[in-house]
Image 1 (spheres, rainbow, N blue to C red):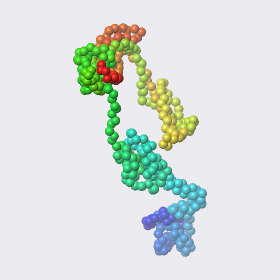
Image 2 (cartoon, rainbow, N blue to C red):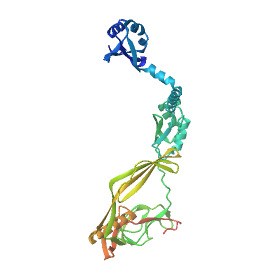
Image 3 (spheres, rainbow, N blue to C red):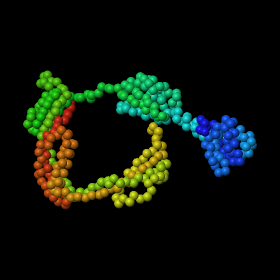
Image 4 (cartoon, rainbow, N blue to C red):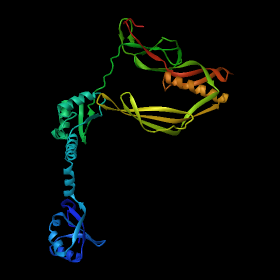
Amino acid sequence: MKEPPLASLRGFVTLHVTGPQVERFINAVNEQGIVIWDVRPAGDGVSLKLLLNDFYVLRPLLKKTGCRMHVTGRNGLPFRLARLWKRKLFAAGLLLFGIGLLLLSSMVWSIKVEGNQFIASEDILDAARQEGIYPFQWIWRMEEPDKLSREMTSRMPGLSWVGVQRTGTSITIQVVEADKPENKPLLSQRHLISRTDAVVTEIYAEQGRPVVARNSRVKKGDILISGTLGDENNMQTVVAKGEVKGLVWHEYNIEVPLKTTGSSYTGDRKDRTYLVIGNWAVQLWGYGKSGFEKSRTLTEHDLLSWRSLQVPLGLMTEKEMEVKYTSGTKTPEAARQEGITRATNDILARYGTDSVIKSQKILHEKKENGKVYMKVLFEVEERIAEELPIVNNRGE
Protein backbone atom coordinates (compact mmCIF):
# COMPACT_ATOMS: atom_id res chain seq x y z
CA MET A 1 0.00 0.00 0.00
CA LYS A 2 1.02 3.62 -0.46
CA GLU A 3 2.13 5.84 2.38
CA PRO A 4 -0.89 7.75 3.75
CA PRO A 5 -0.94 11.56 3.47
CA LEU A 6 0.76 13.65 6.20
CA ALA A 7 2.45 10.58 7.64
CA SER A 8 5.41 12.61 8.83
CA LEU A 9 3.15 15.01 10.74
CA ARG A 10 0.97 12.26 12.23
CA GLY A 11 3.95 10.05 13.13
CA PHE A 12 4.68 6.47 12.08
CA VAL A 13 6.71 3.53 13.35
CA THR A 14 8.71 0.79 11.67
CA LEU A 15 8.06 -2.74 13.04
CA HIS A 16 9.84 -6.07 12.70
CA VAL A 17 7.19 -8.78 13.07
CA THR A 18 8.19 -12.47 13.67
CA GLY A 19 6.23 -15.62 14.42
CA PRO A 20 4.68 -18.75 12.85
CA GLN A 21 1.67 -16.91 11.37
CA VAL A 22 3.07 -13.68 10.00
CA GLU A 23 0.95 -13.86 6.86
CA ARG A 24 -2.20 -14.37 8.94
CA PHE A 25 -1.21 -11.34 11.05
CA ILE A 26 -0.88 -9.13 7.95
CA ASN A 27 -4.27 -10.31 6.65
CA ALA A 28 -5.85 -9.56 10.04
CA VAL A 29 -4.34 -6.06 9.99
CA ASN A 30 -5.83 -5.40 6.55
CA GLU A 31 -9.21 -6.71 7.67
CA GLN A 32 -9.16 -4.21 10.52
CA GLY A 33 -8.66 -1.40 8.00
CA ILE A 34 -5.23 -0.50 9.33
CA VAL A 35 -3.01 1.11 6.71
CA ILE A 36 0.45 -0.45 6.43
CA TRP A 37 3.10 0.16 3.79
CA ASP A 38 6.65 -0.68 2.81
CA VAL A 39 6.08 -4.37 3.70
CA ARG A 40 9.17 -6.44 2.93
CA PRO A 41 10.83 -9.64 4.16
CA ALA A 42 13.39 -9.12 6.92
CA GLY A 43 15.26 -12.11 8.32
CA ASP A 44 12.80 -14.58 9.89
CA GLY A 45 9.87 -12.14 9.61
CA VAL A 46 8.71 -9.03 7.85
CA SER A 47 9.32 -5.29 8.20
CA LEU A 48 6.46 -2.84 7.82
CA LYS A 49 5.39 0.68 8.63
CA LEU A 50 2.14 2.02 10.08
CA LEU A 51 0.75 5.18 11.65
CA LEU A 52 1.32 5.87 15.31
CA ASN A 53 -2.42 5.90 16.09
CA ASP A 54 -2.82 2.36 14.67
CA PHE A 55 0.12 1.00 16.65
CA TYR A 56 -1.91 0.66 19.87
CA VAL A 57 -4.58 -1.65 18.29
CA LEU A 58 -2.06 -4.32 17.22
CA ARG A 59 -1.80 -6.14 20.57
CA PRO A 60 -5.02 -8.25 20.15
CA LEU A 61 -4.00 -9.22 16.62
CA LEU A 62 -0.51 -10.25 17.76
CA LYS A 63 -1.98 -12.34 20.58
CA LYS A 64 -4.47 -13.96 18.18
CA THR A 65 -1.79 -14.95 15.63
CA GLY A 66 1.01 -15.73 18.09
CA CYS A 67 3.36 -13.16 16.54
CA ARG A 68 5.74 -10.78 18.20
CA MET A 69 6.82 -7.34 17.16
CA HIS A 70 9.86 -5.16 17.72
CA VAL A 71 9.95 -1.41 17.04
CA THR A 72 12.94 -0.61 14.83
CA GLY A 73 12.15 2.99 13.95
CA ARG A 74 10.18 6.01 15.17
CA ASN A 75 9.61 8.86 12.74
CA GLY A 76 7.51 11.99 12.46
CA LEU A 77 6.62 15.15 14.34
CA PRO A 78 5.22 13.52 17.58
CA PHE A 79 8.51 11.73 18.26
CA ARG A 80 10.54 14.90 17.54
CA LEU A 81 8.37 16.89 19.92
CA ALA A 82 8.76 14.19 22.55
CA ARG A 83 12.54 14.26 22.24
CA LEU A 84 12.48 18.04 22.35
CA TRP A 85 10.29 18.03 25.45
CA LYS A 86 12.95 16.02 27.27
CA ARG A 87 15.31 18.96 26.66
CA LYS A 88 13.14 21.76 27.99
CA LEU A 89 15.95 24.30 28.31
CA PHE A 90 17.07 23.69 24.76
CA ALA A 91 13.49 23.99 23.53
CA ALA A 92 12.99 27.21 25.49
CA GLY A 93 16.23 28.64 24.10
CA LEU A 94 15.23 27.68 20.56
CA LEU A 95 11.86 29.33 21.04
CA LEU A 96 13.40 32.49 22.46
CA PHE A 97 15.90 32.58 19.61
CA GLY A 98 13.08 32.37 17.06
CA ILE A 99 11.13 35.11 18.82
CA GLY A 100 14.22 37.31 19.03
CA LEU A 101 15.03 36.74 15.35
CA LEU A 102 11.46 37.64 14.43
CA LEU A 103 11.59 40.83 16.49
CA LEU A 104 15.00 41.89 15.13
CA SER A 105 13.84 41.34 11.55
CA SER A 106 10.85 43.59 12.26
CA MET A 107 12.99 46.64 13.09
CA VAL A 108 14.78 49.24 10.96
CA TRP A 109 18.54 48.84 11.38
CA SER A 110 20.09 51.15 8.81
CA ILE A 111 19.01 54.20 6.79
CA LYS A 112 20.90 55.38 3.70
CA VAL A 113 20.46 58.67 1.80
CA GLU A 114 21.25 58.82 -1.92
CA GLY A 115 21.15 61.57 -4.54
CA ASN A 116 21.86 64.61 -2.35
CA GLN A 117 24.69 67.00 -3.23
CA PHE A 118 23.95 70.30 -1.53
CA ILE A 119 21.53 69.30 1.25
CA ALA A 120 23.27 67.55 4.16
CA SER A 121 22.32 63.94 4.82
CA GLU A 122 21.81 64.81 8.50
CA ASP A 123 19.04 67.28 7.58
CA ILE A 124 17.28 64.66 5.47
CA LEU A 125 17.60 62.09 8.27
CA ASP A 126 16.13 64.61 10.75
CA ALA A 127 13.14 65.12 8.45
CA ALA A 128 12.77 61.36 8.11
CA ARG A 129 12.85 60.97 11.91
CA GLN A 130 9.93 63.38 12.21
CA GLU A 131 8.01 61.10 9.83
CA GLY A 132 8.84 58.02 11.93
CA ILE A 133 11.85 56.74 9.95
CA TYR A 134 14.78 56.14 12.28
CA PRO A 135 16.93 53.22 13.46
CA PHE A 136 15.27 50.68 15.80
CA GLN A 137 11.80 51.73 14.65
CA TRP A 138 9.26 48.91 14.20
CA ILE A 139 8.62 48.37 10.50
CA TRP A 140 4.91 47.74 11.06
CA ARG A 141 4.57 51.18 12.68
CA MET A 142 5.82 53.02 9.58
CA GLU A 143 3.45 54.61 7.07
CA GLU A 144 3.22 53.48 3.47
CA PRO A 145 6.22 54.54 1.30
CA ASP A 146 4.07 56.75 -0.95
CA LYS A 147 2.73 58.72 2.00
CA LEU A 148 6.21 59.04 3.54
CA SER A 149 7.54 60.38 0.21
CA ARG A 150 4.83 63.05 -0.01
CA GLU A 151 5.28 64.16 3.60
CA MET A 152 9.06 64.45 3.32
CA THR A 153 8.82 66.36 0.03
CA SER A 154 6.47 68.91 1.60
CA ARG A 155 8.62 69.14 4.73
CA MET A 156 11.85 69.99 2.84
CA PRO A 157 11.42 72.77 0.21
CA GLY A 158 14.90 72.11 -1.18
CA LEU A 159 13.80 68.69 -2.50
CA SER A 160 11.67 68.22 -5.60
CA TRP A 161 11.18 64.46 -5.12
CA VAL A 162 11.74 61.90 -2.35
CA GLY A 163 11.54 58.13 -2.70
CA VAL A 164 11.47 55.75 0.27
CA GLN A 165 12.35 52.10 -0.38
CA ARG A 166 12.61 49.33 2.20
CA THR A 167 14.77 46.25 1.63
CA GLY A 168 14.60 43.90 4.60
CA THR A 169 15.71 45.90 7.63
CA SER A 170 17.33 48.68 5.55
CA ILE A 171 15.69 51.90 4.37
CA THR A 172 16.99 53.80 1.31
CA ILE A 173 15.89 57.42 0.89
CA GLN A 174 16.48 58.62 -2.67
CA VAL A 175 16.15 62.37 -3.25
CA VAL A 176 16.19 64.78 -6.18
CA GLU A 177 17.19 68.30 -5.23
CA ALA A 178 15.33 71.28 -6.61
CA ASP A 179 17.21 73.38 -9.17
CA LYS A 180 18.46 76.68 -7.83
CA PRO A 181 19.56 79.65 -9.93
CA GLU A 182 23.31 80.00 -10.12
CA ASN A 183 24.64 82.74 -7.88
CA LYS A 184 26.99 84.72 -10.06
CA PRO A 185 29.70 86.61 -8.22
CA LEU A 186 29.48 90.38 -8.17
CA LEU A 187 32.26 91.87 -10.26
CA SER A 188 33.96 95.14 -9.41
CA GLN A 189 35.05 97.68 -12.01
CA ARG A 190 38.38 96.72 -13.49
CA HIS A 191 40.91 96.86 -16.31
CA LEU A 192 42.35 93.85 -18.10
CA ILE A 193 46.15 94.08 -18.13
CA SER A 194 48.94 91.94 -19.51
CA ARG A 195 50.43 89.50 -17.04
CA THR A 196 53.68 89.17 -19.04
CA ASP A 197 55.69 90.61 -21.93
CA ALA A 198 54.09 89.50 -25.21
CA VAL A 199 53.09 90.33 -28.78
CA VAL A 200 49.31 90.56 -29.13
CA THR A 201 47.89 88.12 -31.68
CA GLU A 202 44.17 88.31 -30.88
CA ILE A 203 41.99 90.72 -28.92
CA TYR A 204 38.23 90.66 -28.33
CA ALA A 205 36.59 93.24 -26.05
CA GLU A 206 33.17 92.11 -24.82
CA GLN A 207 32.92 95.09 -22.50
CA GLY A 208 35.30 98.01 -22.11
CA ARG A 209 37.64 99.86 -24.49
CA PRO A 210 40.49 98.00 -26.25
CA VAL A 211 43.75 99.90 -25.86
CA VAL A 212 46.08 97.75 -27.97
CA ALA A 213 45.77 96.15 -31.39
CA ARG A 214 47.04 92.99 -33.04
CA ASN A 215 50.82 92.70 -33.46
CA SER A 216 51.32 95.28 -30.66
CA ARG A 217 54.19 94.56 -28.30
CA VAL A 218 53.13 94.91 -24.66
CA LYS A 219 54.96 94.68 -21.37
CA LYS A 220 53.86 93.17 -18.13
CA GLY A 221 51.25 95.43 -16.48
CA ASP A 222 50.19 97.28 -19.66
CA ILE A 223 46.43 97.85 -20.00
CA LEU A 224 44.89 95.71 -22.75
CA ILE A 225 41.17 96.47 -22.32
CA SER A 226 40.35 99.57 -20.30
CA GLY A 227 37.44 99.72 -17.89
CA THR A 228 37.01 103.50 -18.34
CA LEU A 229 34.84 104.98 -21.08
CA GLY A 230 34.48 108.58 -22.25
CA ASP A 231 36.67 111.59 -21.61
CA GLU A 232 37.69 113.48 -18.47
CA ASN A 233 34.46 115.49 -18.41
CA ASN A 234 32.15 112.55 -19.01
CA MET A 235 33.82 109.40 -17.77
CA GLN A 236 32.24 106.06 -16.83
CA THR A 237 33.85 102.97 -15.30
CA VAL A 238 32.74 99.42 -16.21
CA VAL A 239 33.83 95.84 -15.67
CA ALA A 240 36.22 95.14 -18.51
CA LYS A 241 35.54 91.78 -20.15
CA GLY A 242 37.16 90.11 -23.08
CA GLU A 243 39.86 87.78 -24.31
CA VAL A 244 43.41 88.65 -25.31
CA LYS A 245 45.99 86.23 -26.67
CA GLY A 246 49.62 86.87 -27.39
CA LEU A 247 52.94 85.31 -28.24
CA VAL A 248 55.01 84.62 -25.11
CA TRP A 249 58.51 83.13 -24.86
CA HIS A 250 59.35 80.54 -22.18
CA GLU A 251 62.85 79.23 -21.55
CA TYR A 252 63.20 75.76 -19.98
CA ASN A 253 66.28 74.06 -18.54
CA ILE A 254 65.66 70.33 -19.04
CA GLU A 255 67.59 67.30 -17.84
CA VAL A 256 66.67 63.70 -18.71
CA PRO A 257 68.55 60.58 -17.47
CA LEU A 258 69.62 58.08 -20.11
CA LYS A 259 69.25 55.11 -17.75
CA THR A 260 65.79 54.34 -16.43
CA THR A 261 64.46 51.96 -13.80
CA GLY A 262 60.86 50.99 -13.23
CA SER A 263 58.64 48.50 -11.50
CA SER A 264 55.43 46.70 -12.37
CA TYR A 265 53.11 44.14 -10.79
CA THR A 266 53.24 40.61 -12.17
CA GLY A 267 49.63 39.85 -11.17
CA ASP A 268 50.54 37.25 -8.54
CA ARG A 269 49.57 38.07 -4.98
CA LYS A 270 48.94 36.52 -1.58
CA ASP A 271 46.17 37.73 0.74
CA ARG A 272 46.14 37.55 4.51
CA THR A 273 42.95 38.24 6.47
CA TYR A 274 42.89 39.31 10.13
CA LEU A 275 40.13 39.77 12.68
CA VAL A 276 40.69 43.17 14.30
CA ILE A 277 39.52 43.77 17.87
CA GLY A 278 40.72 47.13 19.14
CA ASN A 279 44.52 47.16 18.86
CA TRP A 280 44.67 43.37 18.47
CA ALA A 281 44.68 41.47 15.18
CA VAL A 282 44.22 37.70 14.88
CA GLN A 283 45.10 36.08 11.55
CA LEU A 284 42.26 34.02 10.07
CA TRP A 285 43.46 33.03 6.59
CA GLY A 286 46.53 33.29 4.40
CA TYR A 287 49.18 31.53 6.50
CA GLY A 288 52.60 30.82 5.05
CA LYS A 289 55.16 32.79 3.07
CA SER A 290 54.47 34.09 -0.40
CA GLY A 291 57.81 33.15 -1.89
CA PHE A 292 58.05 36.43 -3.82
CA GLU A 293 61.54 37.81 -4.30
CA LYS A 294 60.26 41.40 -4.42
CA SER A 295 56.81 42.50 -3.28
CA ARG A 296 54.71 45.37 -1.98
CA THR A 297 51.99 45.06 0.64
CA LEU A 298 48.76 47.06 0.65
CA THR A 299 46.55 47.03 3.74
CA GLU A 300 42.77 47.47 3.66
CA HIS A 301 40.62 48.01 6.76
CA ASP A 302 36.93 47.14 6.85
CA LEU A 303 35.72 48.13 10.33
CA LEU A 304 32.11 48.07 11.47
CA SER A 305 30.39 51.43 11.77
CA TRP A 306 26.97 52.82 12.50
CA ARG A 307 26.35 56.32 11.13
CA SER A 308 29.29 58.36 12.46
CA LEU A 309 30.22 55.86 15.20
CA GLN A 310 33.24 53.70 14.42
CA VAL A 311 33.29 50.28 16.11
CA PRO A 312 36.78 48.87 16.88
CA LEU A 313 35.81 45.51 15.35
CA GLY A 314 36.18 44.29 11.80
CA LEU A 315 38.50 42.75 9.23
CA MET A 316 41.90 43.75 7.91
CA THR A 317 43.28 42.41 4.64
CA GLU A 318 46.94 42.49 3.64
CA LYS A 319 47.55 42.12 -0.08
CA GLU A 320 51.15 41.16 -0.83
CA MET A 321 51.73 41.68 -4.57
CA GLU A 322 54.77 40.49 -6.49
CA VAL A 323 56.80 43.28 -8.09
CA LYS A 324 59.15 43.02 -11.06
CA TYR A 325 61.84 45.67 -11.47
CA THR A 326 63.10 46.59 -14.94
CA SER A 327 65.86 48.84 -16.24
CA GLY A 328 66.64 50.29 -19.62
CA THR A 329 68.73 52.77 -21.60
CA LYS A 330 67.46 55.62 -23.76
CA THR A 331 69.07 57.05 -26.83
CA PRO A 332 69.93 60.78 -26.76
CA GLU A 333 67.20 61.38 -29.35
CA ALA A 334 64.59 59.65 -27.18
CA ALA A 335 65.76 61.57 -24.11
CA ARG A 336 65.57 64.84 -26.03
CA GLN A 337 62.01 64.09 -27.17
CA GLU A 338 60.94 63.10 -23.65
CA GLY A 339 62.31 66.34 -22.22
CA ILE A 340 60.51 68.46 -24.83
CA THR A 341 57.27 66.56 -24.22
CA ARG A 342 57.61 67.07 -20.47
CA ALA A 343 58.13 70.82 -20.96
CA THR A 344 55.18 71.00 -23.38
CA ASN A 345 52.87 69.35 -20.85
CA ASP A 346 54.05 71.78 -18.19
CA ILE A 347 53.25 74.76 -20.44
CA LEU A 348 49.73 73.46 -21.13
CA ALA A 349 49.16 72.83 -17.43
CA ARG A 350 50.40 76.29 -16.39
CA TYR A 351 48.90 78.49 -19.10
CA GLY A 352 45.82 76.57 -20.25
CA THR A 353 45.10 73.65 -22.53
CA ASP A 354 44.09 76.06 -25.30
CA SER A 355 47.65 77.38 -25.48
CA VAL A 356 49.38 76.71 -28.81
CA ILE A 357 53.14 76.12 -29.13
CA LYS A 358 54.16 77.94 -32.28
CA SER A 359 57.84 76.98 -32.28
CA GLN A 360 60.62 75.58 -30.15
CA LYS A 361 64.38 76.05 -30.37
CA ILE A 362 67.14 74.18 -28.56
CA LEU A 363 69.60 76.85 -27.45
CA HIS A 364 72.10 74.51 -25.80
CA GLU A 365 72.48 70.73 -25.42
CA LYS A 366 75.07 68.47 -23.79
CA LYS A 367 75.40 64.90 -22.50
CA GLU A 368 77.09 64.52 -19.13
CA ASN A 369 77.02 62.08 -16.16
CA GLY A 370 74.49 59.81 -17.86
CA LYS A 371 72.04 62.65 -18.51
CA VAL A 372 71.04 64.90 -21.38
CA TYR A 373 70.95 68.61 -20.49
CA MET A 374 69.07 71.08 -22.70
CA LYS A 375 68.03 74.73 -22.74
CA VAL A 376 64.92 75.12 -24.91
CA LEU A 377 63.07 78.30 -25.94
CA PHE A 378 59.33 77.89 -26.63
CA GLU A 379 57.20 80.42 -28.49
CA VAL A 380 53.62 79.98 -27.20
CA GLU A 381 50.34 81.66 -28.07
CA GLU A 382 48.39 81.88 -24.82
CA ARG A 383 45.94 84.00 -22.85
CA ILE A 384 47.77 87.00 -21.40
CA ALA A 385 45.00 89.06 -19.74
CA GLU A 386 44.53 89.38 -16.00
CA GLU A 387 42.33 91.64 -13.85
CA LEU A 388 43.30 94.96 -12.26
CA PRO A 389 40.64 96.60 -10.04
CA ILE A 390 39.93 100.31 -10.62
CA VAL A 391 40.53 102.09 -7.35
CA ASN A 392 39.45 105.57 -8.51
CA ASN A 393 37.48 107.22 -11.30
CA ARG A 394 40.32 109.30 -12.68
CA GLY A 395 40.77 107.07 -15.68
CA GLU A 396 44.00 105.61 -16.88
